[in-house]
Amino acid sequence: MKELYCVIGNPIAHSLSPVMHTALLEQNHLDASYVPFLIEKQEFTTAIEGLKALGISGCNVTSPFKEDILPFLDALDSEAKACGAVNTIVARNGRWTGYNTDGIGYLQGLESIRTINETDQILIVGAGGASKAIFHALIHHTDASVTVANRTLEKAVKMVAGTAHRAISLAEAESQLADFTIVIQTTSSGLTKENAALPIRLHDLTARTIVSDIIYNPAETPFLKEAKAHGAITQNGLPMFINQAAIAFELWTGIEADRDLMRNIVLKQVGGK
Ligand code: ATR
Image (cartoon, rainbow, N blue to C red; front, side, top):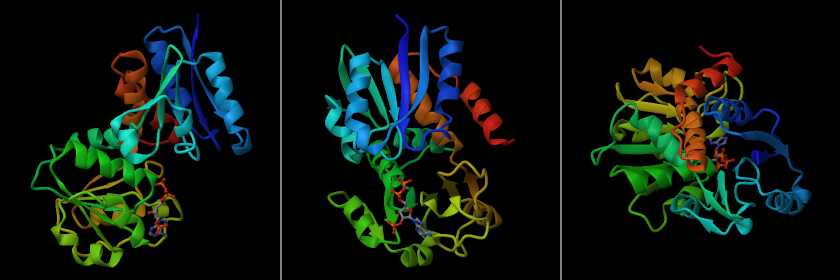
């Protein structure tokens, strides 16, 4: 029987997951479909029960349901457990396992620039859901020292609690900027207008520092533009976006995802180069 995969969220119309996954399913001649489902918050339980009853094979979960889905899962992988959030579900024989591929997806992108090692001092700006996923991937899969800076300091403090890593204020991040080899922008501030204030000023950035932003549309946020002007090596959020989806596809099918195909599809949709 034809297998069904989906992405659930609200809003969902903007999601590029259906075009990417449909292309991968077709390329691999799999008898399966991938569709978006818009779910109203008050209908969430009914909708999830419906997906279970239909016997879907897998699902992506996006905002605002990455935490709401937890009570419906039979098991969690270590990354999802650490983050308390799930973006991918694998359903096998009616058993649903939750994964979080955002952090590992980010790390794969970062490591395409160079290998991260114990001499790296990494600054993560922001302490929201995406930051948390990246933080856990970095501390579990690299030997780097990680510092989280956030406008609301308590959120960063809570994130690093119980680890050997640090939380600082945005002002401290600005003044200590020269110490970092990698800076990761995870706040939503770059999504807004061209002249939006940067979460931190980059005057003290050392040339050749790797600076990445998890936003991929626009392709160059004001943060990345400023970093480039200071001689940084920059990377936008496209590799993370592609890789998190590729890892989900690989979890579902066991087939390596064609990341070039995925990248071309996304670039075509967002009108990038
Ligand atoms: P996501 O799940 O996409 O990471 P989120 O959980 O809403 O998004 O988190 C947004 C992050 O962006 C938070 O770290 C937020 O800071 P606060 O915790 O202080 O709210 C940060 N953020 C949003 N707008 C910002 C701005 N203009 N300047 C600095 N930080 C900002």
